[in-house]
Image (cartoon, rainbow over all chains, first blue to last red):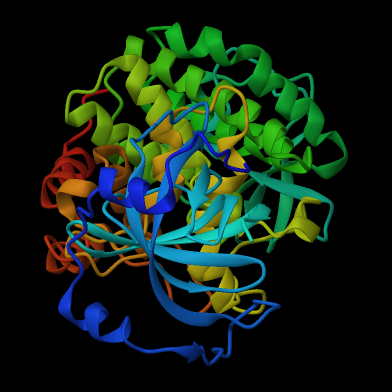
Length: 137
Length: 322
């Protein structure tokens, strides 16, 4: 979804949605790392994934009919990304097949949840597959 | 199915004053062979039933070629049997267990999630009907359920045990049915797309087909397969998704802790574990009820919910009153 000149800037969005995550200390350390992630034996990813840390805004787009769980737009922390997907740290659990829109400083994307892992009481690692991608540059 | 052209059936599905619609055979130990017990036109009598009740380990078979007649006999008479007060509870439990097995096998062979879901709904409606007319007893379940390592058996048994727990914790009858359907479908993520042809004989239960990746991801895959199917409820989705979550947060796929796991998923988790322990597996024999509860009680409040274990244990140890 392209942003128009009337839309708030990325910085404004970040200010309007303060981070409510509680990132566990061991994950804080991990977030300092950069560069390509080593693949595991059972990894089925087809494109390399890179560690990064940056803010993003996640917005609910479409839920499952049996589980309508809309949530307010939230600030999340991007943890890693590849050409086909990314993962974020978020303060709530999302479920597979839910659709979201993510606002990054350089792009917007729509993506589908593929997995979620609880890291702490207000911290979930959520993996997404990118459906559409729109660069802002 | 057997290579001799006979199919084993549960002896207590032979209901007095009805014809099974096919020749029925029993295993004769002395002759070391099967002998004809009832002809296709012959009605089951009270003395037939007395013989079968007195010989609980008697193996009974029908012709493979006319198995569909036996299924028709089960399907057409089931409702009448379930509400008939003169039919003993153990027979009603046996016919419903056999019906579940037959009906779910048909749904499974339908090669689609929809056909499986339809068969589960059909089965659980009948279980609800049974529950309206008698107290469903855990001991009877233990006596009539199969304990082999097949996917269908595991689905059926998990649904039956979930029924007992859900009833025991006071769920409404509608909710009990919802939970039972969820329990029957909980492992749907284990079915590999190429195996949706009815030949799949197990997931975790079949070591030759078992793959760690399937083990790890089947709750997510099950959720994905069910979430776009009309009529599937949130509870059923969560049962497929959360039945390997553990109370201490060390389960998968999410690692949720006790309060974050839905109660219906805790029910499914306990029912799943109990059936896993009390059924045959390629690497070990089935455990007795007491041994299974010893194991499960050692896992309470780490892996399993203690209240759900208590409910199932109480239901399974309660003496039969019908």
